[in-house]
Length: 276
Image (cartoon, rainbow, N blue to C red):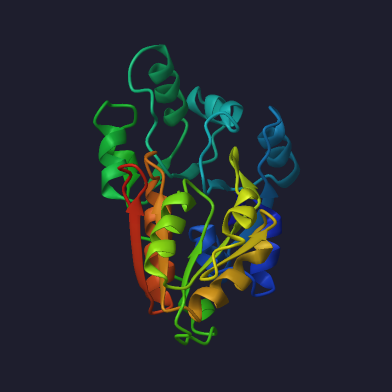
């Protein structure tokens, strides 16, 4: 079977070089291992991107690992009205925020074009099917766990410090305040910018705090191995979130990495937010 995977081919290239784990691809690596031909194609905001990919590769099915309805509007619309007949499978990482009115009807139409929709948690599935945006029989939570072949190659130790990695919904100010008061050693590793947040101020903020080290990296998956090795050498992973709702994918990923490296994990919400 020829499967069109619409995601980030450079990240798959990193996987082939041992730079990231296979669970980042939500089963597509295992599909390839099972003998299917997986076409690693680039997701774009361009309106005709999916149509061009289908015309070029003529797949038997389409797999979208992180469904963005706007990016895939055309192919989902054509599938919903019967003009594209190849099955489309997708992961939905969080429930739609609009559950009534005209926009919810738009979501319902788009979801009709999907053969099956996968979720990362029962809660997200429940919150999506309750307002009848998508039919329950088209949804499931297949389970998602760590690529232990990847993590087992990383040596673990305890050098006495805590490490805080990541970039999504992070409340580093609360974390810094806590470690400044406790005196425990902390290493913050994060991206310079992500999704509107700028973390470059952390170097200046922590320059006179002797027990806190800051490493600012490019916002690239190529730095993942570096961060994982730092986590593997730490006593535990420390995470503090903003009050914004935390997508299930982040809660799962944090737990997956911590358990895979046999590390404790601590999390808390800044200003009332939750942690995982």
